[in-house]
Length: 203
Image (cartoon, rainbow, N blue to C red; front, side, top):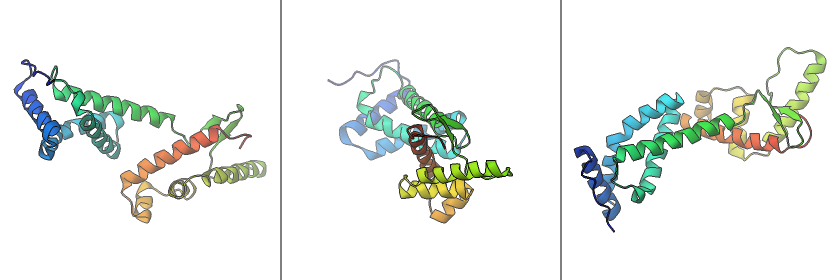
C-alpha cells in the first residue's frame, strides 16, 4: 500500500518525497545523488560539531546516508525527510562517540578477567633500574599481545605506538588515506582492549 503524502510538508519536503519514490520504485541513481547533494554539507557540519574531526565527520556522513538509503522504505512522509535523516546521522554519531570512549587508551590502566591491573606503556622514560626492568617486562608482554593482531593492525600499532610516528607519516609509509589509518588504528585499539581484558596475570 502506497504511503499518503502529508499535505503539511513544505515544497522542499514534497520534492524529497518525489525523489524517494523514484529511488525506491525505479532505483534511480540520480534521485539518490540529488538527495545526498541536498543534505550532505548540512549533515557533515552538524557531525563535525559533535566529533571535532573532519575525517571522522566525513566518514560518519557517508555512513549516515548509507543507513538512510538502506532503510529508505521505512521512511514515512508524516514528517520531513531531513528530520528522519538527521535523526539517523545523530544516533549513528552518538554510537560512534560511545564506542570511541570505550576503546583502549594506551596510557591508562585496565583490569583483566581476574581483576588484576594492566596497562600499555610502550615508551621508556627516565626511570630507576627496577622501574626500567618492570617497564621492559610490560613492553615485552604488550608486544606479545600485539603479535596476536592481524598483520595490518599489528603494523599500524607498531608504527604509531612503538615507533611513535604521526598519522601523516604512517599514511605516507603505508600509502593509505589518513582517514583509513585513523579508522584502522581505532579498530586495532578496540581489539587490544578486548584482548587485555581477557588476559590472565598482570603485565
